[in-house]
Length: 326
Length: 288
Image 1 (cartoon, rainbow over the protein chains, first blue to last red):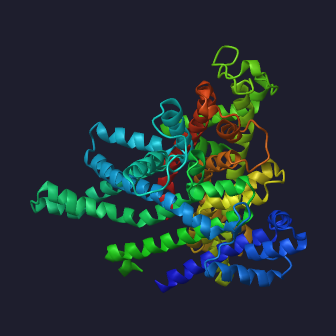
Image 2: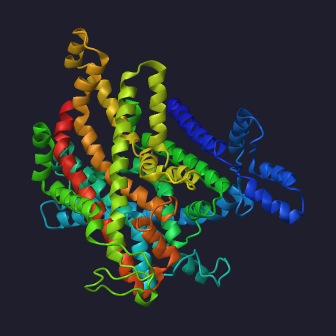
Image 3: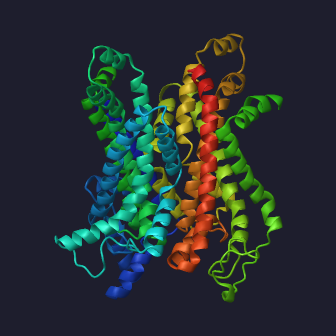
């Protein structure tokens, strides 16, 4: 376990070093446009403004490479992920606003797709040799083929533009102030449906196919035959022997899947104008805010690595066989 | 040449899935190669012909600027197809090179390569691609540069598979025999080990086509590459942000034609990949 931890830290360090090198060897000074703005705002010289901008971004090209590298890593360790030149706030501030929306959509989509997918998969496997199994399998394969952001465009077009069932974008109705009222909650849900569907459908298909494959494999195991010979009722065999063993490997990929979705969510949020992490990621590209871009990326990398490590620990706790093997 | 036909092309053609996938890909390949000569593209704006529905003169209708949609799709396919094949090819080259190097290098250089492969395996690849592409956004990378950029985030799974394969093959009897016979390293690498790897490279090339398509369309959609306006990703960007075809009911055929072509191409890639995996999986198992 300690070995895994060291490995994860090493991978995180390599990835962050890559980000730093990109910023360091970028032509031009990323703080320049910010400095111009500050100079005009406060009526000071450009040089003074550049100094302020460098302090805000936590990065100075005049320092030697090693010094700014150490400062960069130290900053991340202390929770400073840089400064957004477009929004003129620290990246952490933007994350604080955006993360709840992304988590709402991703956790909701993951939960629904995992529960429904593992149920459908087990059901399809147990219905082998009927017409239902190929129907479920084929549909899943077709849905899985759709890239999530293409699906997002289709959902937006059909659901919002043609049939007016869904809102065109945003996280809640523009004429509402955030509160804990029922109507506000309803508006939040209505706005989350589009991005949630676009993320959940391909996932649902993937879980269904994986669960079907696992269940089919478990069905062929000797201990299932033995349980039947012992005269256990089918209901007990299905829940305690088949589903339990088939779902175990999926639990491990649950956290990994969440991390993966955090990365692939950029385009979906961009399509729905949904103000989560991915939306700001796309925004950072559109307005060339490199501070925001690299800060968000560093955060996404750390989140994915943490999720992967957590998944491995969890899996070890659930499945004793893994502990013995490693 | 004959072996290539008997070992690769014939089985792919005989499998139902991969045959359909191959036909779809060949259709788009033909569209990219000869299509632009058959369908002339006229990008001049004719606002009086805005959002014409599909007709004989315009089989897929016209867009916001009154430009024929079919012509745009056909001319854009050249870049779409070129990008996915080239980046998939470069990813196979890079993955094979890194995998073989990792499998053959002992001690800490090998372990360092292993770390690099792991980094590219675990980081979320699409955001990473976006970050790197954002730094090159003002340069015209050309099709080769853009493909290399996409390939940079595709090669890692192949490198992992290849390195595992090389590690297990280098101690097999026939490699041992070559070594005792005093064959040069280049012979062992390219004759003994490479032959074992060919099915892997083939499967991964096909598998990567789908990812390469999603990556390139995503890049273009976010406006991260300077390229001609008929790439399908750029067309989607126009639909959403510039001309707003997505938000006008008359513009539906514009959105639908682009999306349908992307989906059909993805399905072609997936069918081919599934078929190819079915064909070569038993053969891959033999080596393990």
